[in-house]
Image 1 (cartoon, helix red, strand yellow):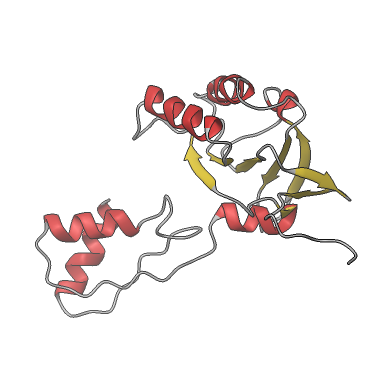
Image 2: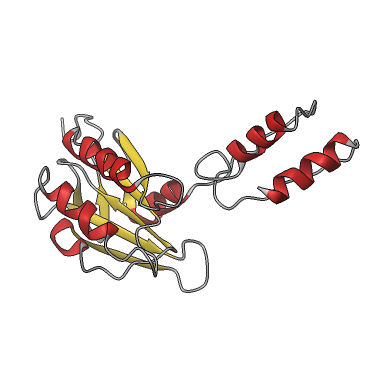
Length: 188
């Protein structure tokens, strides 16, 4: 938040400034914070948000086509959101058969959030539901793993991982995850 304040102070002085945010600044990025700080400071400045590529989109491109239907992006970090609310969101997305993309699945302090989320999802999904795990997307050491929901609890994930859990229609083909959009495809 401090860098947002500093940027706004400079913008009020008439300077052109930029806040750099990983991924897309409007999805768990800095866009919300910069607007809130500008409002708090009553700064009369123009703010432009330049979209980026969020981890969900980058992971999906590497995994094939897993996000072809409705989806929920949920952060398992409870630093700013109560844990119970996070799990409620996981449950409702699972009940709605939405593809679920998990950000911040595990940290050194939060070792069991992914396990608890997986247990909730397993109440509404088959154990063989495809799951894609991407680590270090677009960086050195990028890793791609396709597994199943039953094996997700014990998966090697951390704060640099993005997890995509398929819906009831998602399947794997040629080491890729595919969620059909519903088009009639085949020989006619």
